[in-house]
Amino acid sequence: MLTIHSDAHRLHHGAGEFYRGRIVPCFEMPARVEQILASVTARALGPVVAPKPHGRGPLERVHAPDYLDFLAGAWDEWSALGETGDALPYAWPARDLRQDRPPAHIDGKLGFYSIDAAVPITAGTWAAVQASADCALTGASAVLGGQRAAFALCRPPGHHAGARAMGGFCYLNNAAIAAQAMRDAGVGKVAVLDVDYHHGNGTQAIFYDRADVFFASIHGDPAVEYPFFAGFADETGSGEGLGCNLNLPLPWGTGAEAWLAALDRACTALAGWGAQALVVSLGVDTFADDPISHFKLASPDFTRIGTRIAALGLPTLFVMEGGYAVGDIGTNVANVLEGFARG
Image 1 (cartoon, rainbow, N blue to C red):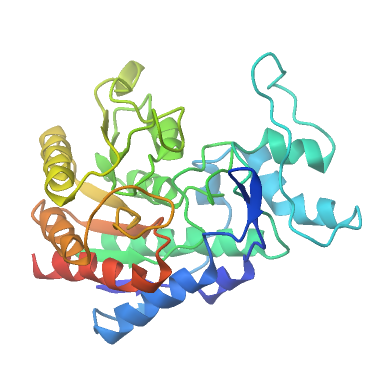
Image 2: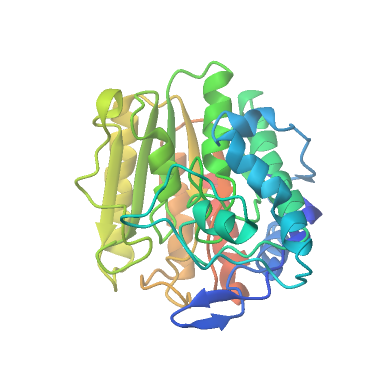
């Protein structure tokens, strides 16, 4: 399986994020990718290549131009104030506040274009997120070109990013950008399967009223889990997209058998819908030892995930999302890919 990886991910290395009343070291860190790359290489799963640059055009197919302008210029605006630390939001346009006017000041922009305070912007963030999207687009091109599957080793991740907002360590929605690229290349029906512990609220919102992209997500129940305000089972799409959105929230403590039963349900649904290509938002924070998650999958269970996805028989792009047990992340990701390759 082809792996697409960029060293530019290291340019984004936030010093901290706001978590439960404290500024803590970022859970999303460069070491995650280094561990995954080491495991993929050690197991000889296939060649590793650098992404090809795709420019801003494919990003604008998913994200609003003003949001992309914000991301591209945020660090310059922040550093022009004399700031040298990470830029983090602290005020948001919540209830009863205007949401139709982007502020002129960077402090306001940071809140206007975000959903939380887990999105530090550093001097290298824009370069890193562009490279991350290029990994996904290069992987999509490989699959469209006849590869059975490819793995976009994206960092930063993307599934919490909406058309006009960053959040949950995510800035550009790599999976959505890849799915849209597949549609633009002529694939009639594309499915996005999100197996990250946290609901892919950004991906859902981007495709929620569309009938050409099916979104299925297995995740922690948002009644008690981030992102809290999306991911409930009654969210099934709207307008032309009604019935093209499947959320399978599960309770804290869910183990492998219940989780895999939900995966089988999701796979059956997207196959029945008629998917012709598949993008997998690959999070491995369902692992029992993940520091910010509450499912109980063991490392061998990730092999079973890959095998079940392979049974769909679809051209498949894996796009890296979450997973924060850094010491085990490489093993768990490689197990998924190996399970798929053998399936």
